[in-house]
Image (tube, rainbow, N blue to C red; front, side, top):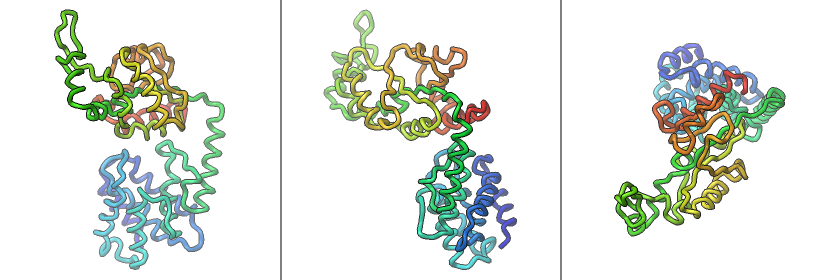
Length: 331
């Protein structure tokens, strides 16, 4: 099997950067050697190293890149992969297809492929956990990585990150969608509870003052997942503003955090109309209001505006924070 030709093919068609590119594939190949035990077909593992990410469309969360990579592998059956037996080819196909969704299989070769990839998670600032490895040797190596990381960071203070709620973690529109047309009319622009200027002219809706609206709001996008990721490495607090004239919103926010993030953000909810009074390193907020902009103007603190052109989504936010902290020697 000509692995070098496979390596050159993969490098030639790769359009993204090195995060999931050639340096990563080389390390996966090397990790396969570290994981080798009797019964593992290293030809399959080496092929997997250079083919498993070819279906990626971006460097962020791309759960379907495994199946897409498997489809690419199929096109190579009678060319670069012609020397594989049918058994080897089917194992390679399965490993590529499942590595994004499955923790383990009953096949030691496929499980070694999974663990070879996972052992390179430190490149994206994730230390592999023994419980999430598929092979006994993978668990052993992950445990060693965990212990080494703990020794390295034992005396380092954790940075503080604040995360806004509405339209950052919480889908505000989902609350609006759950209200009746009559309630929306009353609290909408021109309704009896809508916003008015000093002269009493209608100027906007007042949906955030609808009693109970915050009780029915759902999570937005990858926000909850992102907070869980950050909480492994930083001191994370939820920093939100609640409408002054809607007391139910205050208690609803507590219930929401407890429901979706209670295990990582227990007693880590701060409600304030003056976010600039909080001391910390990062504030992730979609708007400059209620002191968010002022927070970022303080030396040593930064306001990250989720949804802006610079930070259009959580992938961009996480990559930026982890890159900055790696450069600063914090991770």
